[in-house]
Length: 339
Image: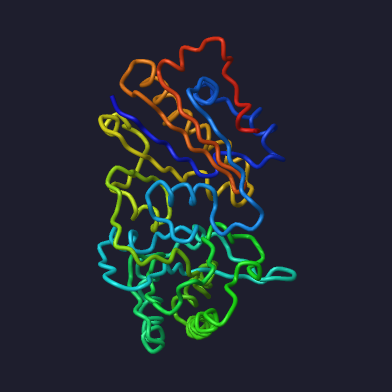
């Protein structure tokens, strides 16, 4: 019998919305999984964070952490068929930065809907500027590039999902090492401002790609983790795993061995505070994940299920087994979503 770890970013609602959202859910299987457990723990983040709880958890679980920060770049490169070799590599995400009332703000990268042709064209435009500055730029996919900058070690950079919707002033790197980064950012912004890709996107009422976000620095040659499966996650995260699932149907095929599944279906709705869509996403999880996995625990096909649910502020880590599900005296409840 196998063990499965199910990681669901944004499956914990924010505390101020949690009671109402829990009442709106019709998820009896999830309630049983949350209530009848063999272990559980909840962790809350501090105020000044540079990675979300699930990102920190993944970095530690996969051994991809450097100085307390996720160090995903080299492993993601290998997952996308690139050889990082030596040097200090960063993940580069093309981005849209907009002016709010009093500050700059980065939009959710998922909303860019950048095609391969668009990503490749913007990459080829930016590459000469990077090379002139002494940095190699490598292409992974439309929204996931990599920059080698050996002299930029120590830059204090946050993950893109950490900064989305926030005041970017609080997350921009500071100090002497940040000056070359900002200079390169400005040069590429000016180049992309009049690029045909952005003209075409604006004609289709899509946000222009007017900046890039740098993060995930790593100098290790760690590879992908073949036992990790992913569904509906950003390109860098999919690259860390061994298999991408187009659908969550047919989970029986992955229950024969120990595995981890990261499903990012809830991210866009939660980031946008679209709680109606979030509830519908949780209902789909009930049908496609929670109910089938509860059944496999009860009939013995799955020995242990570990659930890792997170929000921007907290992470809930619990485990359950077939034996734990026999605790009939523990009434199934969604109370732990509100803890």
